[in-house]
Length: 154
Length: 438
Image (cartoon, each protein chain N blue to C red):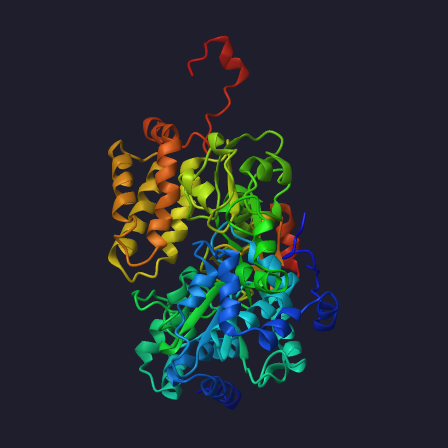
């Protein structure tokens, strides 16, 4: 069940657009902001409120890289795997990071602390390699810097 | 050297009052108070401003396609989705001077008489989102947005939309679908968005760098804009360089500087110990250029004559210690992943291409693979797919097959990657019994 807050926020988005369906992505973002991921139940709830079929909402939800249809950890790590980062040492960063976390792309650490995802181009190619943890961007990375970065997130 | 776009970039960016103090919002005052919408469009057309998002189409011409006499809303969208690998120029403008973008958007919206404007911003640009949200609020408070702007009767609402991550959103019709809450698949053209865009209404989508230039063109005129450039394409351009150069970065420079100046002077040349092999001149979807192209001019015609595209003007350098096959594999992995899957050649062909390259990179390539890759560059080339994603993906591949063919062949012949898996150093003792046989 969507909370009152979620419902109100979605209704607010609906008022901004000429047709209800057009609020679909915003509605999914609202749900995810409150629950960190979008469950099947949430898909049905969003579909109800937007007069869409759950399948239609799911087709939108699964299209976008950053709408999560599975539970995720408390912190999302987006590792830039694009070309400038590739040239500037992505391999070493990836090896160190997956070693420290003990997980691969798409997985969440057993303690639920981190989910690791590849991310196409963070747009900071002059400071490659780069990654983001939640809202924080880290640039000019060196494998040796990764442990300290992870330590900041509990 | 004038740097109109970047001279007032600061972190954090100028607040509205500070922006006004350096002449900000004068273009809005001039346009909405003293110019007819068609005169704004005519001025931009006269300046010969070409869109900075990659395609390089005349901005004024694009605006002139909007039917001005249709009833109902019209829309303006700033494409701030910047997700092309190797491209990082718009981030600078978005984070460093959001009011300049907003001012350009208000003028552009006025020119087409749009009633609503959107900034379509990618998720990862968190600082830009904060800066733009604040700038929009300030502009409303100061009367540059909202109802009856500066008492002229012209009204414009502006919204910030943050994306949820998909490269396709940068394609203007896919972007519109995404703004409508749908999957970001491209639309058939015609009708073009200028006629039938967002919610079926006339819509202009312009790149951030393009829109940021508009206030300066309004204030200083078409001739001034042209005079900034060394070639027929007017203005300055934000060029960038990444890869193993001494000083990676972005610079606002006259349109038409040479690649040599950009890479050797501004980016400082190659890092100690690395040699130059090639460069993608305008992001991941452009053809490689090599040594012999160093003196070409970096404008739309100059790069096209060399067989590539200026694209976004942000370059990725390939050095002599990075494997060209691995480099291209990384690019094709990106394109395969970001294909929207809407049309078959792209959905099926890009993963196939990626797998072939991966096999070659891993030393499992067959001789006939190169021929097969070449055929893919045709099958997925212009005219065979619904939009430009797959043809763009084929540009670095086809040029890599041309310029770095030896590297591909060596992978296949030696069943290994000569770069990532170098021959283990021969122990000194071995030399006592063997002569070099490499």
